[in-house]
Amino acid sequence: MIPYKRMLITTDGSDKTGPSIIYGLDMAKVTGAEVTALCVIDESDYEDPMNTASPDAESVLYQQSMKAVGSIVDQGKTRGVHVRPLVISGIPASEIAQASADHDLTVMGTAGPYRYIASFC
Image 1 (tube, rainbow, N blue to C red):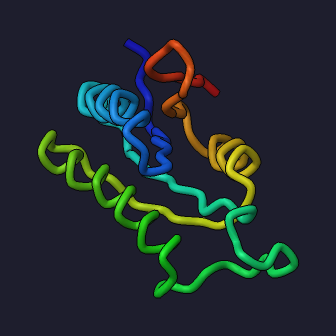
Image 2 (image 1 turned 180 degrees about the vertical axis):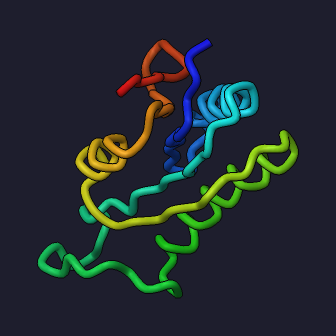
């Protein structure tokens, strides 16, 4: 087995990410990897497209994102895997690609016919 040291698990809070989260956490348990749970608040979701400032901790988008990564933290606890939650604002594809550079493995859900995508960096 490849010894992953740092794993990134992404979520948008939808049910489509469930299988990838389970896959990632199970792999982290086996490999002993450090896990970061990432949710990117999509800047295109803001009401004012000219305002690209990050939403504050009281915003609905931030609360939903924290709930999504919190779910991964909780699932990690039941598997004995420590998970660091991370919520950032930006363009999801760009932010995930940037965060992936600091990890050995990125696991994310997909809406396509496959249940998850694992990207090896």
